Length: 485
Ligand code: TRP
Ligand code: ZN
Image (cartoon, rainbow, N blue to C red; front, side, top):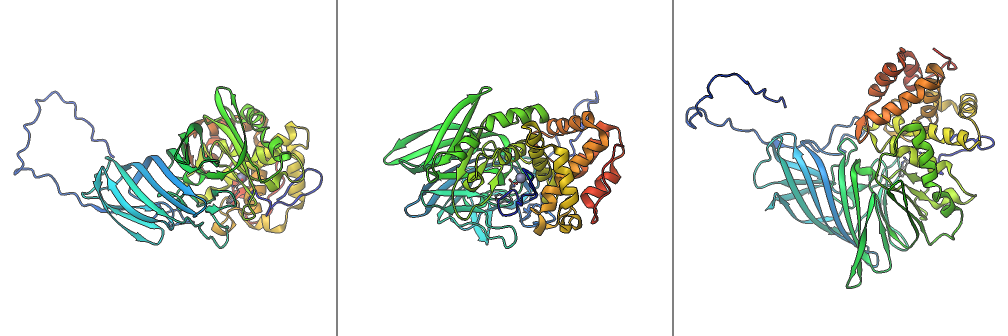
């Protein structure tokens, strides 16, 4: 958890907290077309798409049988009535012969579904929307589903990990959460393994601003309502989508040819929050010097203030920060953390939630690198104090296999960050920074696993690293102090 909940300060400035049928290009004359009676089309067995992608920690998250390429989410939200109406268009490719397929949708009532323009039948099983197209979908073919829905959005409850998703605020709404959020405001294949591009069109009463991911597409008003457009053209995991509606102090600029869009809720006085997110491009430029090119087409940050949200989240190209981070002063550490996620977590995304340290360990280590850059403290000092002082629980919880309940535990964040420092000590600075840059470059706009990271680290460094990763990621005892291999 990179939130105020789990952060504990340790001394000055330190935190613990298909088989392609090969075209037989022989020179023989083409065969005569088989007559239908002699060679009937083999009948296809259309089956129901799975109601989960099979994530070991969250078996019901996402769905099977298709791969989404693009979402167009058009919603209208009326804060006075706390009512959302929407039409979401899902462009996908079938990965099996499907009689039905599911989308994740929490609460909200579906009034109509079409698939490829033809009415489809739909039913609900809790948070699963089951769609039965007029005819089966063929493996490998694209299809377009359009879902029309409405209702009072409600966040998803999660006993151990906290609420996620759409909440009504004093001046609007916030849709934010990890590992789940998106399904509270649009139908979605809600698992990071199915990245897609997004277009958002959000209509709110005149006077309110609706902020989402990616490049701003402007606004247009008619009849007392304003429609705000946003477009995320880099593949994005669904939990990295966000919608923030309210009144903001907005700052816009252009940096390296990309739009910068920063927003701070007017419910907090102008000050440290504004000054902190104003550092976004400066921090991004530093991280770019360490990790390689900034991966997205826009920059920004949104500062919110709502008693239910005490954390920050790396929503793609535009992280959302709780104002509480900036109560004591300017905080660029949290900005460095969320921006580091743009490379690690967002561009290089998780294939399964178990590998969460790939996100949080890297973002934590980036805080230490940023601190060293700004001369606040060194990465070595950050490692040393934790190695000496973290609670015993950190050594008992393997960050590479934390369990669903410990997904955002100190082990994932702090021992995850320490794992990278141990790697750096083992392979030396040159190989370490080459590993990190190569990881960001090779897995850009994609998903990845811990096993792939270990293999890449060994390839780039030319060193055998199994023992190191076994001890740091999977051991249940404090590993030996790192040394150069
Ligand atoms: N990934 C977030 C970060 O490290 C923290 C986080 C964990 C979070 N669970 C969340 C944020 C739920 C919002 C909602 O910055
Ligand atoms: Zn994080």
